[in-house]
Length: 89
Image (tube, rainbow, N blue to C red; front, side, top):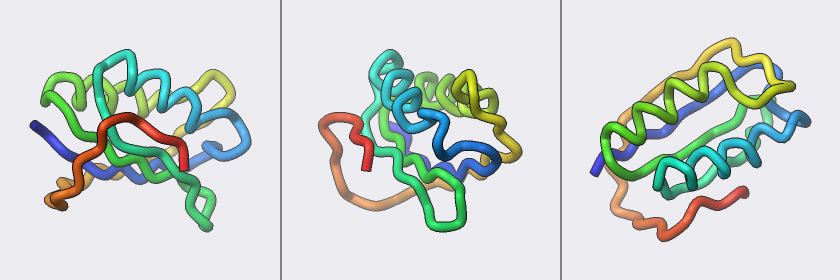
């Protein structure tokens, strides 16, 4: 299982970005969450199969139809929490 924390910057709030994240995560069989950050970015925690996580990361560079992604920072996450679904926080 692969687990990463993404910080996505650009025009990613107010454009249904988190909802699209949830849809893609469910499509790829991933769990975790997406939440808005105070600085205008979106934080996404993903866990699941390595190939599925990598597919999500590729998708996140494009984002939702109305978003404009400037940067996707990918960090390995080693926390022990287990997520059973993908939530919008």
